Length: 191
Image (cartoon, rainbow, N blue to C red; front, side):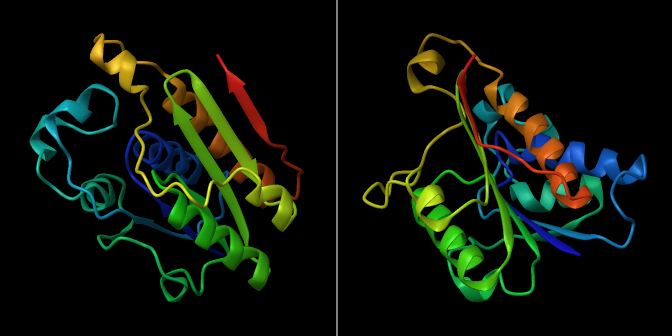
């Protein structure tokens, strides 16, 4: 089993911590191979709401987490189908719709599984693979802007919300459900 987590920021940096804990607790098969991908660098202001340490500022996010959690790091932006070939499950923790849409279409076309995890401040969203039409109705293919796991207005006020950590925990449970043959459902909440 090969798993690819795309995105190592506000959601992904906490998700990989939870996933590796599941390996340690023998809740995920030791023969499962996990890779994490992100091309972004760690910035000082992100330390408030992403799972990084001050000595990692300026490092690539995937590389820093790969070293800390002993998983394979991909430091290139994942935006082409050939970059996701060979993976059985793709976990989206991305900040853009272009990658999200590409992964959803690829997984439906190739019979692969995915989980789509999102947060903006107190708003959380977690979606498993359902139908192509059902999954794509939550993607705005006209929106190519990148987003933060924090609400911009909250950040301006100095407020940090915990939706990103909550959806990371939901994501690891959804991954366990998927691996155990249990169903998942879409979760769309404001906490």
